[in-house]
Image (tube, rainbow, N blue to C red; front, side, top):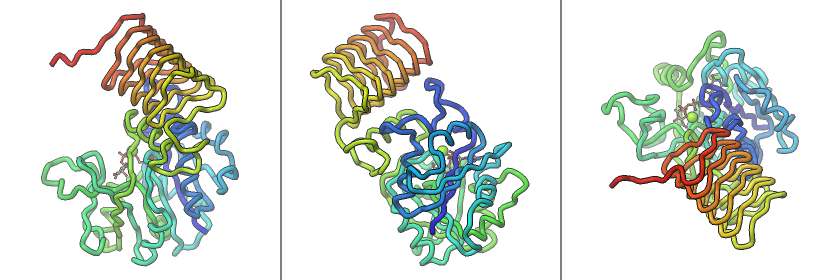
Length: 360
Ligand code: GDD
Ligand code: MG
């Protein structure tokens, strides 16, 4: 039996993306709430019991995921009254686990998409007889992450969360947000106050001589902190660049959900999702984008690498590139939105209101 804790709390989850009404973990990537991919991937790796650790918006998860049986797992929810931090949340959720002190417990940050060999990480943890095993990836700019230098055998030498000075940046190897804990280690985390696993537990374990083992696997890995990466994740799931059993359809250049309408000469590519009841007009070109349910793309519009919210409209000939159009917003015809533009929910942009110039 393999058990896991899924961390779905904290500020990042609470703050809805300003342009989409749904809380982030429930925004649909490749047609289903993002968390479905994490649950399905864990189940496929042999996880049978998942405890979802939430502190806000718990009420949105349970109606959708239920007892987990649709995913082949037993799913439970624990709700923190006040956010307990990552370590406190792990400790709190572990109350529901059934394994003994030596059992292996997987822990996932809820805001990453990864192609990690989860079962392989558990095997490595057992082989190393580690207290905690961490999946590590190498990134170009590690500043927004937890830095984790290791020795040649993979033993973790330090853990520096979000380095503040250039001197602290001694590696490009970062915490990828997936761990295997020995159960007894979780039980040693204080249970009566907020604890950060990154700032307190890991440095404390290292100082006490515990064995922290790093597995550097440069597999597919994406942090979904920004809408652009969320859109990218969805497109990669649709195209099969990263595998998820939860994608509701065959892999390909686009995923058109039941009830969507796409004009015969519209072009969909790059892993575009057309949500239920959404429509794409004649001559429109939609590339690597998410059109949420009921979105309307009018004729000859061009949408690239963007998120178009529930029931939002993109007017005829309008260009939307690397932008987010909020739920219910209306972007009139002949506009040009690029490079990080965000249209608020229900906002209305008249025709020919905006063009983009890099002024170069
Ligand atoms: N239940 C609960 N309670 N969950 C929490 C809490 C809490 O108080 N605080 C954070 N979480 C959850 C978040 O929802 C997220 O899924 C995960 O824990 C990590 O928290 P973030 O707030 O997203 O942290 P981060 O992105 O700045 O950094 C973390 O992830 C990086 C990889 O993406 C750290 O683990 C870094 O070390 C890591 O490199
Ligand atoms: Mg995060």
